[in-house]
Image (cartoon, rainbow, N blue to C red; front, side, top):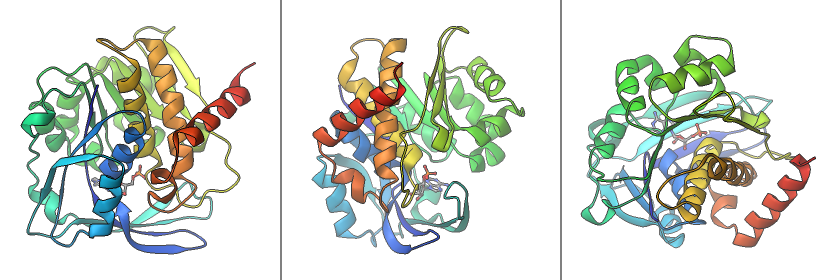
Length: 303
Ligand code: AMP
């Protein structure tokens, strides 16, 4: 089963307490598609400008990602820059140049329309809705979002929630969206707006999965990393790994047990992502790297 991933492709500048990297490959869809590509054929819907470096495109193509759905516009590529604070958990966004994303009208190529797992990575909820309506019969649809859209496009987000199977969101955003300080309440309330499942990411503490009943709950820790070089894109890599795993391991429907495994695989991909700037560690992984960290993680969490 193929995975369709729609979202941003960006040129990022990232500063951490120890280093700074300019003009590197970024964007929600870049991270998610690279992570997914280790598990399943992956198709990308996004937009870049005339200034997008060929070397960045080579990274995506090098992972065998189908880029037919990546529009090349005359404008300039979306750019984002951020700086991490000492704990590497919080960051300040310095600059966002929306550029080609401002007028983005996602077009899903004919050859993508049979995609079974659909990932609406972070971009405007309108772009997410416009992508979703072009796909005929997906088995499972997953969307991510961010605080910007919770503040700017709350109503469209509710419209999106009613149409997707899973929402993936981080802890502070889930609380902000549902106007509560309790994560469990946030997870359960978000489900009431439509998605069958809600995943709340808790950064270095892992992720929580909320399903249909009170019993359908799963908590996954994060892989213990001694050193984090750059956490940018960890959430997107988690999302891509989760979707890719589901695509490779489920048939006509998605069972709760499949979701638990998918979350663990997403966690493994996110952990590798944090070990380098941009997608450097992620795109150079091997299947053996993924399998060995999965086995190690299993040993660390089973009792
Ligand atoms: P994360 O660390 O998971 O929040 O993802 C960071 C990535 O999201 C960066 O590579 C950015 O280029 C991208 N990004 C930041 N803001 C936006 C936005 N408003 N829309 C789409 N992508 C964004």
